[in-house]
Amino acid sequence: MAGTSTTERGAWNSKLGFILAAAGSAVGLGNIWAFPTKVATEGGAAYIVVYLISTFLIGFPVMVAELAIGRKSGKNPVGAFKALSSNKFFPFVGLWGVICGVMILSFYTVIAGWAFGFAFEEIFYYFGWVDAANWLTDTGNGPKNAIIASVFMLGTIKIITGGISDGIERATKFMMPLLIGIIVIMIGYVLTQPGASEGVREYLLPDFSKINANLIFSAMGQAFFSLSLGMGALITYGSYLNKKENIPQAAAFVTLADVGIAFLAGLLIIPAMYVAKNAGIDIFVGDELASSTDLVFQILPALFHSIGGAIGLLLGVVFFLLLSIAALTSTISLLEVPVSFVIDEYEVPRKKAAWGVGLGVLSVSIVVAFYPVLIGYFDYIFNNLGLPIGGLLTSIFVAFVWKTDSAITEMEFGFAGIRQTLFAKVWPVFIYVIAPVAILYNIISNFL
Ligand code: TRP
Image 1 (cartoon, helix red, strand yellow):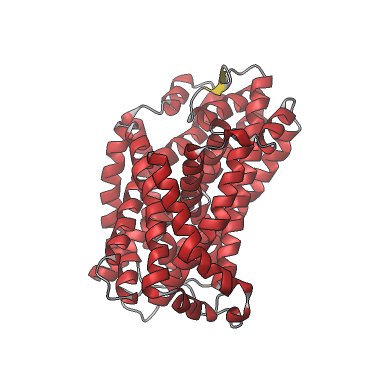
Image 2 (cartoon, helix red, strand yellow):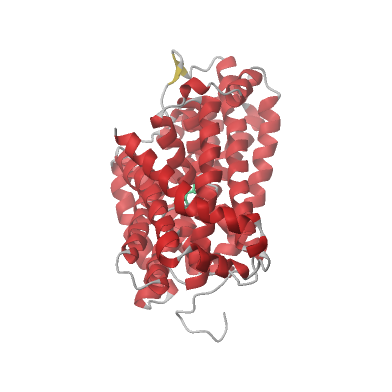
């Protein structure tokens, strides 16, 4: 970035780079760890149906809104709400987003650290270093959790200090295609193993009697989390987006990539559960899964160990590295939000902001590392509740303060004929009515 000041904001180099970075933000532990687990424990294919409806009817329209806010303002979430209206309340919505990002990141790195540790666990297991392997599999071990979460956070900070095109874009451009390739190879392997077809049936045939208010609330929260919505991550990523790009189209790509990878991860992991069961690995207590972390962090290692030999080792290492990579492209986006806030609002140079904020978040992570029970509380407050509330207020902002018409004017850059399309007529209805009403209704019915 020659000839620019230290507070230069940067921009995406290419359209593909932006889409891969935004898809990299979306695709993470949410897709590969949380989604299959929730499908398995909260209603099988019926859960998927509600998740898909939430994604397309609520998530996608809100994503378009966030990207339009970001590109129009060219700012972090707090700065963006300030720039687009004189209303004094909405910058606090941006600030709430920054806080949610910091808190989600603090526990996300601990789970990412588990995944990263398991890649090495597979190696230690293979060589018969049982003590070292067991040390890594103990998700309740505070010092171990803290060490690996720190390594993970330092990697994230390092990439963020590189800026937009040289840091985030370059890293994700290489990691995303690799991730998809590896998942597809593993699905090919699992589906040819005995027992897999039972899992495929469980995954794809919905039992609609399982749908209730809790399932809907959980699936909606999952949709927001998985798309990285509701806390301004896509306002921030949109702020680096070129005026030539077509916002609804980019949002559609990102949404489809996110759903596609969640679907593939489920198609890998749910059948793998049944393959493991078929191989005599005990994963069910009665009809229920033993526990939610068990799915990825116990069943899969057991499966890899039962395969054994070099193939078991290879699959295990590759899978957990892949999960770590997916998590890394997500932690990058979670950290970029508070960092861009500090850069824009306090005119701090990027390097300083990245280290300052990153190490601050790491101190919270270390607390979580020692008290993993916090994960459940943080997840509920900042993810299940925080993100839909952020999405609700973002929709209200675009509908009643900034106005959907101004958003569409912004989208005309990169999509000249947008006013003549069905999208321009339908999208405002989702922002005025469908998204806010559905989110509010789901939050309230979850409390009742
Ligand atoms: N979407 C990521 C996942 O599925 C997590 C994530 C990254 C996120 N950035 C975010 C969630 C911003 C909410 C907001 O794992």
